[in-house]
Amino acid sequence: NGNFELLGIEPGAYTLEVSFLGYETIRMPVEVKANSIVEIEKGLQAKSISLNDVYDAEDTASAEPSPSFTRIEKKTP
Image 1: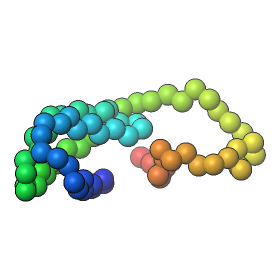
Image 2 (image 1 turned 90 degrees about the vertical axis):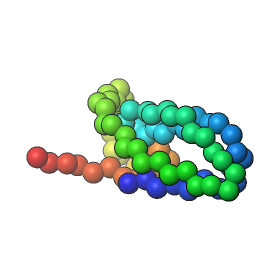
Image 3 (image 1 turned 45 degrees about the vertical axis):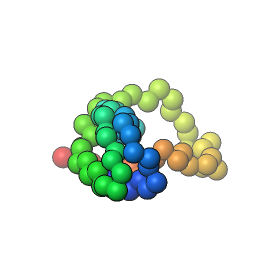
């Protein structure tokens, strides 16, 4: 679950874009008004992805972790 709070946003019309690897990107218009709170509850839809490169674990053990991955879990039926 991703919860975010954005502070100091000037009033006006914006396009909110939410994306994460393995999920469909969503874009939606958001109107920010002075001295108000905008709450948005929107879930991302999973999509299939294909990864082209395969690396040997020994070769990548010292590589820096990618900041785009926060957690990878194996799901079993």
